[in-house]
View 1 (tube, protein in one colour):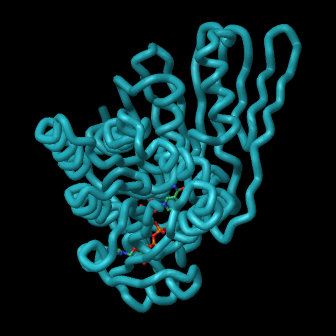
View 2 (cartoon, protein in one colour; view 1 turned 120 degrees about the vertical axis):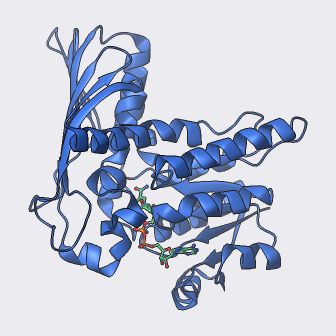
Length: 341
Ligand SMILES: NC(=O)c1ccc[n+]([C@@H]2O[C@H](COP(=O)([O-])OP(=O)(O)OC[C@H]3O[C@@H](n4cnc5c(N)ncnc54)[C@H](O)[C@@H]3O)[C@@H](O)[C@H]2O)c1
């Protein structure tokens, strides 16, 4: 059996708990404990899902054998907790973004590199960063089409994340609106998934120009709620990006690729409008969850893939180096906004 625990019993933790419950029997996962720095929160969550509660990761690791931890804490806690677990030989799933700041993320990458050097003969614990939207039907189909070459030359891309937020979203969990803890707003917390998909489809960014602003929530947050950017990918393709949390409702996240042989629209599913008149539709899966629907339906697929690959030789495919790309794009947009370059 593989013993699993969740660290951070906030909003997204339930999605991880549901996946562990769904996959447990088939994959031999034993969901044993949860941790929260607020023990009463941990206890409530533990009672809800039927596991033990702990107040800190060191406390859990000292008292209970654990093979995998899921880190679902605020961004600024990800790296210390990940290194704590990895250093004790425990595999890690960490929520996006990798960290609140690039230097923090780099610290983990340096740690892993040092670990690889020193453990040349020993298999190091694995780490996966939760970019579950790569497992969406639309993402998988688009990746397949890009790999096949059928779409021809890509003329350009457009992406948008137009969602809504209430002041309560920030006042209930203040870290979300505080630069020091979150490292940013819309880009770091919401649009990072879309930045990740863009660089996965079109290649890493080599130039970024953009601006950010706080258009609606300046009285409750010190991070941005709105951003736009013009992203040049190494492939030569450019993406025009727009994102905001100021809308009155959630629109579907959009990625549109204008290609030689088709106009491809990713928006809650994928529509491929071929130049010869054919139109192909790929419908997204649906899933019942206590988590929010706009987080997508693929956490379980991501978590399944991680556990199925736990004993493979090679590192997990969405690891810290991979997760650095979207973090760098977000941070470049902030720099560009400040410098106006
Ligand atoms: N992949 C997705 O689609 C998705 C969706 C939502 C959230 N997330 C990510 O999940 C993370 C958590 O977000 P959330 O909205 O659930 O946060 P939240 O504020 O609702 O919950 C975080 C919990 O972590 C606890 N915590 C903080 N520091 C801790 C520590 N050092 N040890 C143990 N517990 C600690 C807090 O007490 C809190 O209960 C964020 O990084 C967020 O970006 C990802």
